Image (cartoon, rainbow, N blue to C red; front, side, top):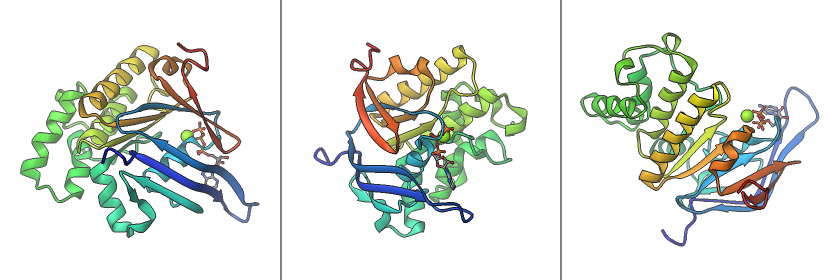
Length: 235
Ligand SMILES: Nc1ncnc2c1ncn2[C@@H]1O[C@H](COP(=O)(O)OP(=O)(O)OP(=O)(O)O)[C@@H](O)[C@H]1O
Ligand SMILES: [Mg+2]
């Protein structure tokens, strides 16, 4: 496992062809690797392809060309059902839109374990523990519309972390939050990822996040350029 990076992209190209519009190539990444346990910030202006890239890394989106390997597994070689299982086991994803379902916080957080066939008597205490970890022990039975934006985000974080994934993807996790709450959520995400030795990729254009990451990748014109925080003048 030590020789296999957490993530490897080769000859990755993604082109959207929608509603009779001219095809638009959003990403073109000849090669890219992310080592185990790395914490990386993915920057880029709105529309540069950050969400598209995270969707490709999670296997939710299939690239037009090229391959995405997570933990040495080429995602395109899995059937859709196996890809869903692989994601539930190994990849946590905090979506830009949170994507919570109209169930209780506890049920939302438990979802990856329920999907993996863990019985309720086992997943309920783990979901309660995961909610407690994000400071929401008292909010287990609340539904998303009964929670604040910051609390909803923390439910999404608890859900993404419950299966102790090797890779955590977070898309603009601080966008809807005040700076203080944003910093608390980022502290939490980074602390848990350190504790589990998980690889973390955070997509954001929030300048306040830059100083937290030694590794920064910039999406520009569909290409991905690595810049250490030092190089971009942040350290
Ligand atoms: N389903 C889709 N069909 C067609 N084009 C799409 C689709 N999803 C995204 N795009 C286009 O791909 C480009 C990249 O979108 P993406 O959502 O990945 O950007 P982003 O960097 O995440 O932006 P933001 O910072 O605003 O979230 C945009 O030009 C967008 O219009
Ligand atoms: Mg986005």
